[in-house]
Length: 149
Image (cartoon, rainbow, N blue to C red):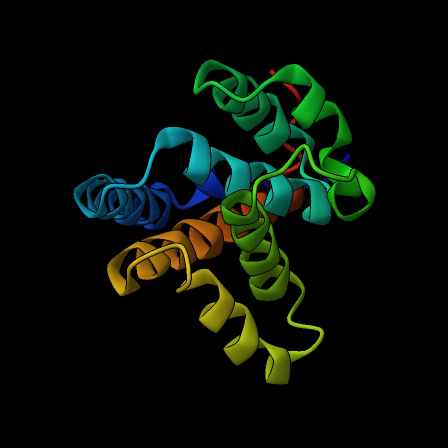
């Protein structure tokens, strides 16, 4: 494989992303989100993007944050899984998918409105930052050829 580990090749840029990630964590904690809620979004985004390195970090983190293994097992098919996921978790998953695929940007307003039924605007904003940033990490890991730890 001839990929360049861009995190190592340009460490100042990667450090800036890590600083943004820390600020994002401060924001979701201050907004009252749980680690389980944020990790759920990160795992779903990483599944969509096919980032094995990020899944290797965030699936265990989701489990440690309290999500039942059965829920994690069916996460790729969450829409068809029936009732394992609460309406609040479904809102997180909808938001994660909408911001990751951007297949239907016109539907984003409805997805955000649905999320606002369960979360404050500050919480939705913090979730969006977490989703956007894990998407960036996914792309860095994939571009760099990062492997499962």
